[in-house]
Every structure is written in structure tokens, then in C-alpha cells.
Image 1 (spheres, helix red, strand yellow):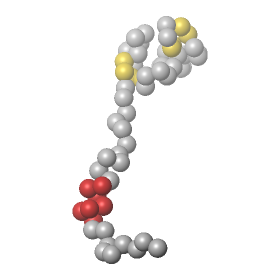
Image 2 (cartoon, rainbow, N blue to C red):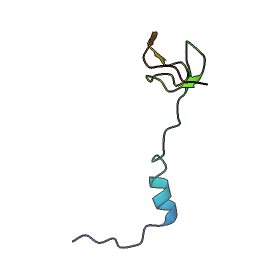
Image 3 (cartoon, rainbow, N blue to C red):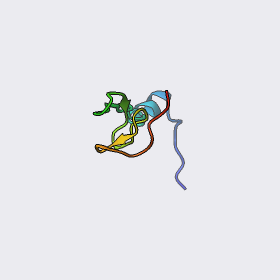
Length: 60
């Protein structure tokens, strides 16, 4: 059975894991009301998606 000869150092381990990070959250302005929203999702403020009313608008 293969066994590591030496302990993996913090530097080696962290160098290997540098690409393992969360992607930044992307926000776009809603074309109807201008509120920030995630792409391909219903706007939480006005309830529009793809130019039509998908859900009821949020009460203010």
C-alpha cells in the first residue's frame, strides 16, 4: 500500500487548493424596474421574467 513519505506542507496544500473557491455572485439590473437580480430568475421586486408577469409583485 502506498504511504506518503513526508507530510504535505501547508504551502504545498494551499498552492494545490487555490482554484477551489466560490464563484462571485453575478447580479444584473432588471429590465422592468432596475432592481438587482440574478440572471435567469424572476425579479423579486416586480415579479417579471422574460417580459411577462411571472409572480405577483412584492408588497412594499
